[in-house]
Image 1 (cartoon, rainbow, N blue to C red):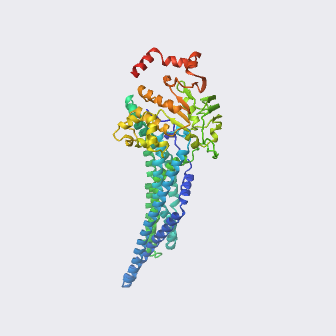
Image 2: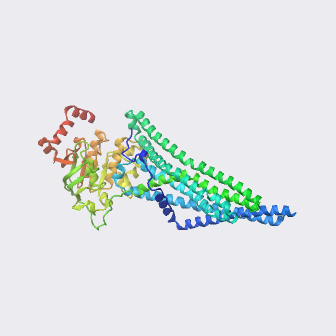
Image 3: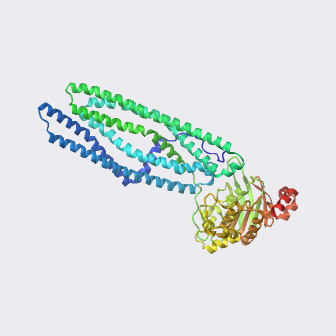
Length: 608
């Protein structure tokens, strides 16, 4: 079992543009020009030092051999050569440490900016984006993928930049010793590059599958933990475990395949490097025997051969990490490049500073999917101070209607106005400041009860918080808690009943003193006796405010000024409770079904 919406299928995940992704990462790193300049300088100086050392050691070897042949070794000159080599080695080490420190700062700055950008992006994305992805998948991108990318970038910069400079510098030093041996070494490069490219090209799609499967696994785990109680109640643990096994199997197979293929690069290139080393040793030995080069020179050349193959092997060893990081980067950029919600219009002074509460839906049409109409040509008028109840079967478009009023989605056609102002021409923040909303699903964050009530108005005083709680009939139960309003609520909202949690969210809406109120099944989690108290508070709250109440329990909306009946995205009836019953239409059928004799007896029993 899974609660996840449709998302990207890991099995079909394909690489986008490997080179383009790499260049985009490079452009991100280049924004910190000072650190990048420091890294390049440190790498250049360190590589230059390492390039000179084999030549110095070769000269020292020749000095010893010549001294033995001539009857005396100049130990002073030998000591100076060895001292110079040691000093260059120590200097290269210090430069490498400095480069590593600078790279760490650069990579972590990139991680900081990516997380900040991703957080800002998530806030700017429309609900449509999250409708097609699980929360776990988005969380995995913002956390795991960013960590994987930045950690790999740090290691790659540390190793590959230095290796690249050595890769370019070593052939120059080789040429000064033996052009013939240099050609032998360089002849293996095309084969090495082809082998790495051949394997890497086949590993990349598997890394994309791996990270997509990671997101799917995380999403399933997050949803099963969140819905653990529901899973247990319905006895679906077995199916949940089987679904997890499927995600885990996909993750295992994609990871195994990706790591195996990328792991082939190092041994293949290592074998080519060994062949090159043997060729250099054999041909070099013949050249020494012929007197073409000295023993010290062939020693230096062999060291250069090792320095040349070392960077190749290091880059090969990093290949799997690079492939994995590119797959993560593609997922990150997919998030960052996602289409944002339509921009807010420019602020107009005075617009909605005060709201009377006249709300109009004028020929409104909306659909989630292009081929599946939901709301078509809907007209609805709510006068200031009216309570408008919206009823209808599941899927009729009741919640969608208020979501459109909140501008969670943009209309396909028509317009919605508040006091004559088209809400598409009003800043979302300004619009939502005038609307209070209480949802069926409660959400409390980790903090005190007082902080949760004041979430929409952090500057509220304690007296304001208590007044809002009293209006919601939550004050009494809050004061019975061990720490009263300072009682800490965990993120899993443990210790509070569903009804108590709902009362806190209702108090939160009371505190912001909205001009328009939306109650989406707000009392569904409250027992019948508590519901009566909440209804009394709502009567006071609704005075002078336009209220939209979505309810399945028709007993809660009998006193509504207007009851709107929706079916298949359209308003089929509207009027008062008495008028709709007399018309004997859709509302009367709903009422009769809900208040049949058995249902009424059950309700009366619950009220006792």
